[in-house]
Length: 462
Image 1 (cartoon, rainbow, N blue to C red):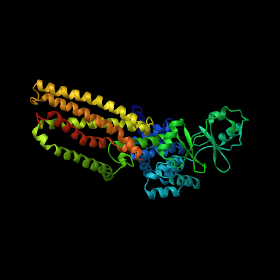
Image 2: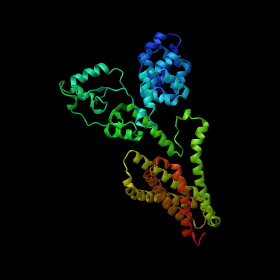
Image 3: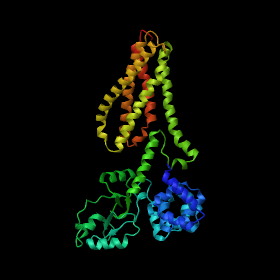
């Protein structure tokens, strides 16, 4: 959403473009790169390029790193080759790797061919790891010190070599063979006696991740230990790079987006919505919709078994949407709550029976509540002459009441147990989407409803 402050900056910057480039440069230098990026997003393509032409090299690179991938790609097309290569060279390795992933293969090949040998090595290293692993999010820009140094030597080394590193919150003790020995908070290093060996400085135990670790495991490690950065090692514990908290936030956003899309009953999109072409969108959504449609066809099959009952008491058909939607809604609520609890580790697989008992009580209580509302509605409408349900309207009301207790309880149990079952089978619990639960409850809800109707209304309407 464009804020008033962003709109004001946009207006003043557009006034300076093409008129006073020196003043434009001075104004841009007083604004945080992230805020400049917000303004750039709102500018036409030809004016975006002007902003990057007047910015100093380092500032331009910082602003570029805050742009969404789509805007980065568009901007590269409008810049000269030298400006484009300058931006790419000055990006942090992890940001550059993600940009290369999204660019067409020929463009990526051309850009990588223009990198310096060291930058090319970093880009190839990062791009060699599978998607959604720690290796894709790490950067090799970190400070490594020798374990035999004392605090004074380590601080002097940091002062001389810390420029341009992604974070200085931690320094890493790496031996001559490149193996990670320990990490050390910069604050602990600063407060230590200058003559103290860095290995003797008191600091929390080392926490690291492997380059092959899944994105979800990395997120859990950050959350568990509350770290601002984590070292990344290989199977031999050799130091490869670090992952910082900004990379984790991006990974968390991607994970949450995928889960939300699966909860909506579709495959997760591989790219942002605006960059997915129409046919890809149809393919991603069509598979699940087709499966759900086939499932809903069972509803018609179920109703055909009760064709005689419906013919005898057409009034029963009036309450079919009410019954099945209530079951689907309760199931969707339950599955959303349990999926989130599993994701946050509030629940484990071993907790399924505790959840089962709790959801039985919740389902019965909620079903009783909804059933009472349905019963009162039927009785009230009959007495106010809004609708004529016939002389057996009390029995119809009780049928709806008892059916809602059964359907809502079943929906709640189905919605809460499916995530556990899928997790136990090794699948993502998010795939037990609300539409899938609703489809399941639709079919069973009809069976429960007409079975209850047959028992209560037998000898009267049936």
